[in-house]
Image 1 (cartoon, one colour):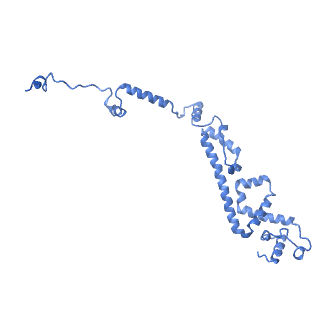
Image 2: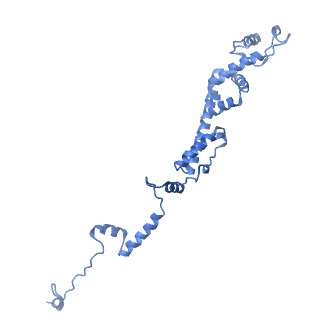
Image 3: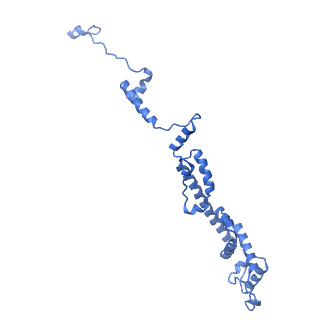
Length: 249
C-alpha cells in the first residue's frame, strides 16, 4: 500500500469529498438560464430591466375598454393626422381633371375617424385618380380604333363634324362627357356626327347660281365624306354633286 493510499485512500475520512453547491434556479428553468447565459440572479434582473425599457417604447393596441383619447393617441402615433384637413392629396397632372374634392372631403372624414395614416390615405386616393386617367386614355384609344375601322377615309371629316356639334353643347355637358369617358364612346361620337350633319344641313348656305352643276355647290365642297350617311335633302344633293364629279361613295 502506498503512503498516499494509506493517508487518503478511497473511503478514507481524509479523502476530499466532491464540492456541491445548490443551484439558484430550479430544474424547470435550467434550459432558459443556459440559453440566456445567466450566471447569477443579477443577470436576470438586468435582462428584465432592459426588457421593460424596450416594451415601454412600444405601441399598445387599443382595447374595447380604451377611452376615445387613448384610441386617438394610438392613431396619431401610427400616422393619422390630428384632423381630416391633415390629409393632402397630390394628383398627377394628367389626372387632375378627374378630381372630385367634395368626395375627397367626405373620404377624409371617414379615414380620420377610422385612424387611417396620412401616407396610406394619400397613396390610395392618388392611385385611384391615376387609374381613372389610365382607363379614360385606354377608352379613347379603343374608340378611335373602332371609328377608324367603321369610317375608313371619312374618319377625320366625321370626327370634325362631331367635334363641331360638341362645341354647341353646354360646358357642363361636355365636362361630363370628358370626365366619365363617354366622349370617347364610338356610339356617342357617331350620334354627334349624325346630329352635326343635320344641324349643318339646316344652316347651310345654299349655293349661288352658276356654282357647280345646276347652280348648286355644297358648303363643304372639298369634304364629300361629310355627306356620306345623311338622308336629309342637303346630304342627298351633296352626294349627287360629288358623285357627278366622280367621287364614289
